[in-house]
Length: 129
Image 1 (cartoon, rainbow, N blue to C red):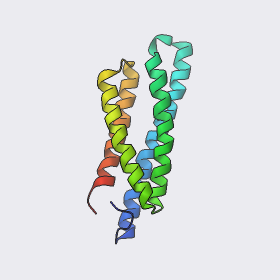
Image 2 (cartoon, rainbow, N blue to C red; image 1 turned 45 degrees about the vertical axis):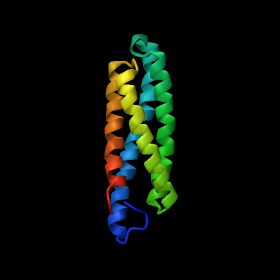
Image 3 (cartoon, helix red, strand yellow; image 1 turned 180 degrees about the vertical axis):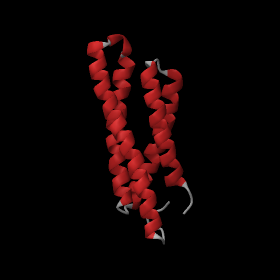
């Protein structure tokens, strides 16, 4: 997918899906922060320091990723490059987290879902025009 694709309607459709995927990633990540806050009050055994750090980092990067996706959808080629770089870095980070961080099970599921959304995004933004 390139921002200067000869078929703008096809690109627009693909970017619409990219924006939805990244939008879902954004919503899930911020709901996770809310869940961490609530669970630390009502079920503190379901939240650890790794969950706090990871949840906040993911929520912040989701905003950045969403901004890049919207800019790329507007046809800004540098934003597409930024989006590609961020998505690859995030996929690597999510994979490492799933294997190496001691997160509560519910949060590992959330991290897996976010990984799946980012993987679908990567497939769309890296596929040949």
